[in-house]
Structures are given as C-alpha cells and as structure tokens.
Image (cartoon, rainbow, N blue to C red; front, side):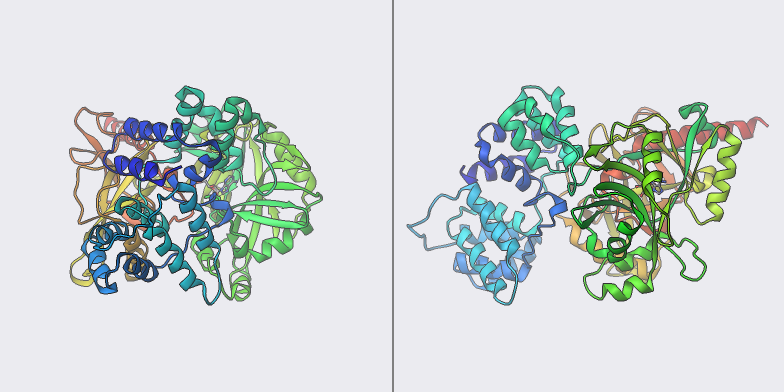
Length: 588
Ligand code: AMP
C-alpha cells in the first residue's frame, strides 16, 4: 500500500476538527487498505507500533532526526535546526527541507506504508553502542525516497508528535463502518477491544471475518483487560438510591491500580493505562505467587505505599519513586508497599467477567492466603446509610480516600464506567471541597517568581458523548515551586502549535497542550460561565459551567488517561446538588 494514501489522509484529518469528517477520512482509508496491513495502519493512526502493553517505544531523539533530515535533504544541520525552531515541529522542518532540496535522485522509489512501519519497528528494536548511527541511517533511507508530505508524517510518527485529534472510539466507529457497514456494530468491536486492549488485532480480525471473527476474543493471560471504572456519588443516601437495599462497600485505597497476570511461572503487571509496569514492582512479582493457591490468574489490586514502622497507608505520591529504571531494589526497600486485592477476572482457564461480584469476591477469598504483603481489600455488605457512613469513617481513619460501593450481582464490565461501581470520596461530603480530576489543555506564562514557567493552567472536563475536552477553569493557586518545575517539565513536551481538535474552549491561552495530563483540583463552588464550555447550554442556554476559586491539590494523576477525567455530566450533577443545598439553607 502506498504510504502517500496515508499521508494524504492524515493531511486531510489535520485540516478538520469535525468528528464525522475525521471518521469518514478513516473509513475511506480503511476501504483501500489491504487486509494484511490493516493492523499496522491502525497502530500508526494511534501513533504507535504495537499495543501499549507490549512496550515497543520508538525512541528517536531530536538531534538524531535533525541529522537524518540534513543528510537526506542535502542541507546543513544548522539549517534544519533553524527550520525546527520556527515552529517546533520536526515534521514541518523535514517537509520544508525536502521541498528546498535542489538535487533530485532519479532512483526515487514510491514508499509503501509497510516499509515505513517495518523500518520504524526496526528502529524501535535497536539497542547498543552503534544503534544511534543505525537509527539515523534508517530514517534517512526513508526520507531519501519520500515526498515532502510523506516526510512530514514519517517524522511526526517517529517523534511521537502525530496528533490527529481522534480517540480510539473514532477509529472503532470507522472500522465498524468500513468492514461491517454500520456504525452500530461499534459496540461489538469495543467488546473485543475491552478484553484484548489491542485495536490492531481487532481491526485485523474484523477486516478478515467481519463480525463473526469477534467471537475469537476472550480474556487471556498476559493480555491486559481494559479496567472497569466507577461513577462518583456524593453521599451514602445517593448511593442507596442507586444501588438499592443491599450492596458491598470496600475501602477505596489511594495507590496505583495494578492488573496482575500470573501463570507459566511468570508474573506480569499492567497499569490502569495498560502499560507493562512489571519492572516497578519486583516485590509484587516475588511475593504474589506465595499468597495464591492457583496456577493461572488475572487479578486486580491497589498497590499502596505504607509506613514501614506503623503499617499506615501513605498517599499515592509516594509511589512516584517506583517509576524509574535504575536502582529499583534500593527504592523497593525505601518505599515499601502492600498489595490489596479487590477483583479477579480469570482463573485457571476460566473467564470470570460474567460472574457476579459476589462470586468473584468469594473466589478471590478462597484462593488467597493473606500475609504481610498481600491483603484482601476490606469489605462489608451494607444494608443502610448508617452502615455506609460508619464504614466510611473507619476507612478514612485507616488512611483511605473513601469507599467503593459495588452491586452484588453485577458482572465485571471491562472498559466501562457505570453505576455498578460507585465511588464515595471523603471530599464529596463537603460541599466546598469537591475534588475533580481535570485535563490540562493550555497555559498562560507566569510573571515574577513564575517567569519562564506556566503560571496559570487552563483545565477541562471530558465530554464522553462528543469525545471532547471542554474548558472549566483557569487555575493559578495551590502550586509549590517544586510543582511548577515539575509541571513545566511535563507540559513543555506536550505543547502543540494548533489547538487539538478535541478541545472546546472559548479562551485563548499562551500555549496549547495535547490534552493528556490529568491533575486534581478542589474548588469552592460551581458557577454559570459565559466563557467556559463545560456543559454548555445544558443548565442554561448560552452558558457553560466554571469552577470558582479552583486550587491545585498537589496531585498529578498521571495514572489516569484524559478520558478518565471528571466529565461534564458529573459537574452538572455537582452543580444541581449544590443548588439544592443552598436552596435548603436559604429556606431555613
Ligand atoms: P478514581 O481514580 O477516583 O476514578 O477511582 C477509581 C480507582 O480507585 C481505581 O482505578 C482503583 O485504582 C482505585 N481503587 C482503590 N480501591 C479500590 C477498590 N476497592 N475497588 C476498585 N478500585 C479501587
């Protein structure tokens, strides 16, 4: 397949922000994609080479790419650096450099998509002393045969800066339309994606066998399952209203969610975002098999940092130390953890997703022998609001964030947020202290002490229906100097020239970011806003919702994907509940 078909599609996609048009461009592309190449094309669209859990990282350094562009275009390194500094995008620099190339090579071959993919794959696998030179040669060999437009997208993919403004849902819509004739079949594709976390494979099977092929997808060891998510509630009363007379309450621990796969004498750990994080927790790998009476299993647990002397839970931030490549053994003893099991999805060849919560919990208890390191998350069955309140109080005293409340006869709904699991956090009980997880979409430069950093951040909620990020507030308080440095470091890698099409904002910050980073915010109140776009027109025509006196809590929630951020609907609920409370107060 000619790579130009892909670069033409990407060019058109960059020019629009409309979801329907973006989907149609993908449908057109899929219709001309040979079956044997569809998985590669889907990964490239996702800006990857393989699903996240395989950990295949492109790893091309800027310097190296600049040298490759210089070599292929016959320009100096200096010239390419200048082009790069013009707009900060190496893709543009490459296409401009090739446009200005004076000598043409007559041997130029048309580049195929398969060649681009395979070359990038080889680059990702290169290691060792001579790998830098080899990487440069590989990129340069592609650029020698590329048109300026192709060069632009090859570089964007290689550098991880391809931003098409689409989420996995849009790719699934397009696959459903292209291969099954109807967008309505998206759900079936999604079900396959939920248990495999591999969109390339889903595309391959649906392209080959249409819907029939999707039966092949089952839970399997060492393929992560997309996690089940919870809705929030504000009070025990609201939970009872939603869950009925009897439900389970578990401590909600403030750590890192870990999906544990054990079998064939191996343990593999996946994060909530389905990355392989086995190397962060050698202590889990060592200790988990000792606590389980089983051969093959997929479990979910919360890894929580603890105070070694008192055994008390410590906040989530302590786990940040684990995210490093070197000296992990020292870190393991310096920052000890416990592993707290709360679900089981697979046991000795049997998929348990359709078993009820009660059945799964029972299995989990049957196979676990608790010890110092491996525990079961504390759980009770509750039948009244008072029991919820008491258990919440106990949980908070034990250092938890709140409770998870779970429907007793509900299955494990992979990849879904629904009311079978509810989260009741401590903060939600206090009208003025609601915490929200918001996506950083832009920033304004700081002044004074904050010169050269981002002084104020522009934040957004997630709108599931439109797959969009809608602005809700600017935040400039709650940051320590250390926070500001850390955020600058993280965010300066996410700067984009143009606003990402998934962002809806009435405000123009000094810089836009890829909507990727989630941070936690508290605020005093939610108000109507003429500027912000969160829940626009829902509460009142022409108005959105905004946070009043927002403040950063110090928590960077980098275990969360932007689609896991608080939603516009949650904010509408908070707004309406807050109105009820104020009305009640003024009536008194
Ligand atoms: P939130 O991050 O606020 O959306 O809450 C969901 C997260 O709570 C999950 O992703 C888990 O990491 C964490 N969690 C802590 N305790 C539990 C529990 N008992 N059951 C399910 N999730 C839990």
